[in-house]
Length: 107
Image (tube, rainbow, N blue to C red; front, side):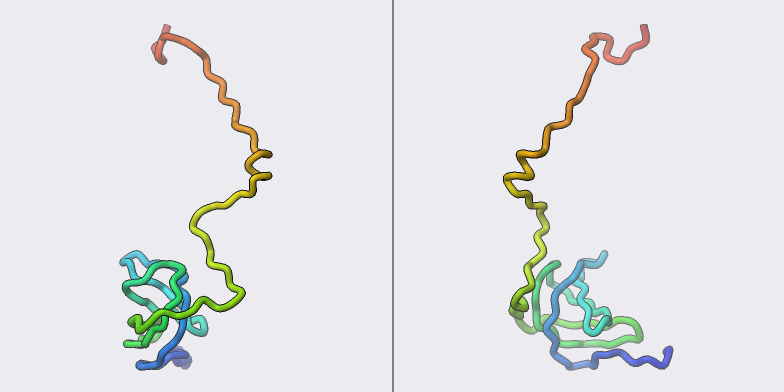
């Protein structure tokens, strides 16, 4: 170990936001910058977790309840949103095609 201990301990309860989902499907949260893997959650969830295992660089936890989203923190939308004005300003792209009947065949 590099002389630095993990900022969490087994059995602790924390309220976290799931920031992303890893390749194996577990949610990824951070407590004081320390990565915690949490199964059974989705990106954007706010949950109470209980630390079940702590390794040198990562920890593991289980969900023990739902947490309230902190006041003033808007939930990040997974969809792009546009105002009516932005939609009206956008002009459709002009695509130019040559009308032929050779279907790409050499003449």
